[in-house]
Amino acid sequence: MLGARLSRYVIDLNRPPNDESLYPGQTTTSLCPTETFRGEPLYRDGCAPDAHERQQRVQQYWQPYHETLAAKIKRLRGLHANVLLWEAHSIASVLPRLFDDKLPDLNIGTQDGRTAHASIQAQVERAAKASDFTWVANERFKGGYITRQYGAPQDGVHAVQLEMCQSTYMNESPPFDYVDARAKQIEPVVREMITGALDAVKAL
Image 1 (cartoon, rainbow, N blue to C red):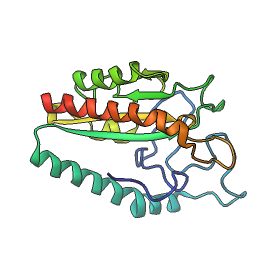
Image 2 (image 1 turned 180 degrees about the vertical axis):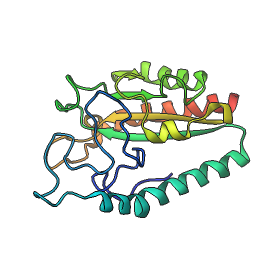
Image 3 (image 1 turned 90 degrees about the vertical axis):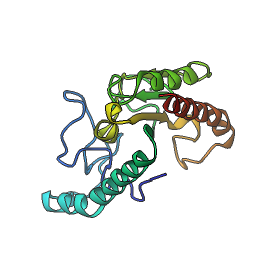
């Protein structure tokens, strides 16, 4: 498991280093955000990172993360014909600045099937469909930079992004506390999605 140690408000590791939009024409967040998902400013006036600061963050935080991720994938591909990259995120379920309505609980992304074999996506969708949670595949979230950059089914690397609503396991308002009862309901669903995907990988 590889996880970020810094807030995405410092630098978003799931954005391209040149800050190119992954969803042209839609409101999105940037590589080094200056406001929250709700549109609240992160910096005092005149204190937002300039181009030099952003480049330093890329070199100091973004680059080492991606070098490590690429090395892990390469090592695993040396051991297995096919590997699964499970790209896990969570997000507030209601964000008027970005979305019109409440997001589905489970948002699956494979860039319209380009980052994972169809049988893998089918197993992930099967687990979601069998649950009591709402879900969609390749709608608002098709997979961020990591999914798109490393998912290469033709080379044995299958990437799936899951953007999960925070409402499935925590309170989305202060104090933003973890809700054990909710988490216990979503945990087996996510586990089934991942194990189903791994079973499909093994079958390739």
